[in-house]
Amino acid sequence: VDYRLKLAEELGGIPVNLDRGDPAEQLRAQTRGRGPDAVLECVGHETPFTQAIQAVRAGGTVSSVGVYVESSMGFPPRDAFFKDLTLRMGICNARNFISPLMPLIQNGRLRPTRIITHTMPLADAPKGYAIFDRKEDRAIKVMLEP
Amino acid sequence: MNAITLHGPGDVRVESVPDPRIVDPTDAVLRITTSAVCGSDLHQHHGRVTGLDPGIVMGHEFMGVVEEVGPAVRQSSWWTAWTTA
Image (tube, rainbow over all chains, first blue to last red; front, side, top):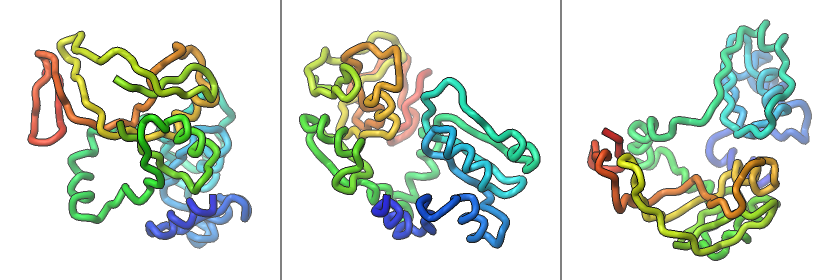
C-alpha cells in the first residue's frame, strides 16, 4: 500500500493511510473539520462505502465506482440522510469522456501511464494476474500485449 | 487467436480460442493491441462471481484497432468514436 500512497502523492494527492486511523477523521483534519466535498469509493465493498459516507461533508457527493460482488450490504442511512448526501454509483460511461479527456492526455496535463507498473506478453498473463492479486513487485497496473 | 481464459478460482490460462467474427449488424471486430488487468477481474479470479462459463475470456480493459464492422456501424469522427446507426 505504501508505494501506492507514494504515487498518489507524486500525482498531486494528499495520501491518507488507513493504518494511521479512521479515514473520515483524517480527512476532516485535512479540511478544517468539514470533510471533502466529494468522495470516490473505488473498491466496491461495504466498508469503504460506509467510510465514504462518513467522510464526505454535509451536502457532499459520494460516487461509488468500485465493482460490487455482494447482492446486498450494510449502509449508514442515518449519516447519509442527515448529511443530505448525493449518492451516485455505477460503471463510468468511459466513451462519453473520451472527447474531453483525450486533449488533456495529448497536451500532457494527464499522464495515465504513470500507474502502469508492468507490461508483459499475453503468454505471461497468469503471472500478471498473480502479482497484481498479491500486490507483489509493487504492481499497480499490469498491461498485456499479444 | 490467443486469449486469457478463466477456468475456476485462480486458474488463469492463455489458450487458443476461435477468432471473433461479425454476427449482428452492430458488431465490430477489434485487433487488440493491449489489455490491462482490472481490479474487478480479481473478483472473478477469486471465485466471488458465480455463473461464469468455464473458459470465459477475460480482459475487459482492452484497446485495439477496428478491423471489421457490421453493416449498421458507421464511423462518426476521425479517431475512435464508432457508433451504431
